[in-house]
Amino acid sequence: MTPTEIALILFGLVVVILLGLAGYMYIRRQNLRQRFGPEYDRAVAEKESALAADKELRDREKRHSLLELKELPDDARQWYAEQWQELQARFVESPEESVGAADELVTRLIAERGYPIKDYDEQVTLLSVEHARTIGDYREAHDIAQRHARGEAGTEELRQAIVHYRVLVTDLLGQDPVPHQEEPTNRSRRGA
Image (tube, rainbow, N blue to C red; front, side):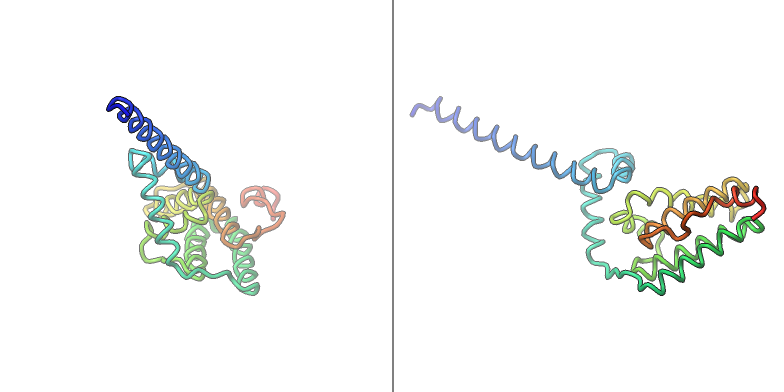
């Protein structure tokens, strides 16, 4: 074999290896994208590169795997569903208190499932592994609750916070906690 033939064979092997590596990375990225949905795009925007976002999301998965998560027993699931129904009913008369109560109820539910609650940012990143489709709702609700605490959120924003919290509660409980119930403002219009 001539040196040129050897060089061409080596070049061909390098190309095949690089194509295989690119294909592997593409499949991993697509899996992350599918698993994390909108959270993937958020991570890319925060990290400013898909490679860094991929690393961050894989790191979240590793940290999440160390948690001792548990399913709620039926009686606890029922208790949270009932608390949520009462909270939504109270919204009509007391939207300001309801948003604070919703944040507390969600925090309690998250803790009971086994997620950390001391550091909000860590809590959200770990929740995003199993609840990527609803974590944006939690961020929105929590942001509105924080603005409300500073006196910067109106009643419509508080209603939106309750709607966003409900999405996460539904996801965490694995069921609709308030079946066939309308949004808080719709009930108030009907006098309920």
